[in-house]
Length: 242
Image 1: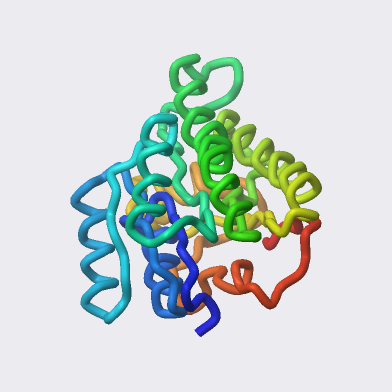
Image 2: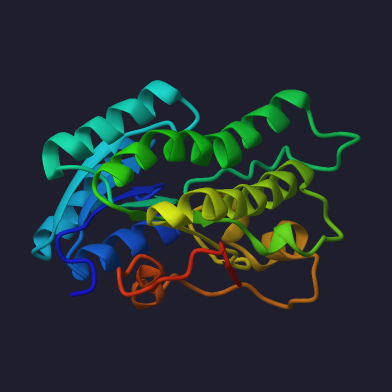
């Protein structure tokens, strides 16, 4: 098992891509901290991991709140001994997002608080734990929107995901020599419990806008990016997987 003995914090792990990743990481031997704003969904994911023979604990977490990050990292240390992997997966993409000329400022601020400040806060509090353990891995979930514009603007989301790519490059350069790898994954549209991802019409109007005709039909736990966490990897340059 590639992650045997490793401790992984995964945000937004109560559903969708995050839940699939949590299940896969646990299958590979990791102890998983399910950091999830929806307490019921988080507990369900942790219970599913436990029922399959894995080890997990759910922590109710709003990633935009620094005190919540302090708590989740403290729980990881107390329960499992520290943090080896931080998988920043949680994000929001409300329907009120739009072009810069019409997106409400409070919507812009909330999206950046979750999608960009959230991963920054996670790194701020997890990196010291990784350094104490001799290294670690940071995985940030960006989006195809960071690289390709769309005819239907979701500018706050797009800006947040583009900035996350740049932040990850900086993390890779600064902390790579200290044994911490930082990588980005940038998926296209995947049908998850997000309301705007559940119908073909919603996918066309919001999820795409770039040259694609359909979204991915489901999330496959077997294809979750555990390989970006394995300690056999040595890349430090912050590559992006699309």
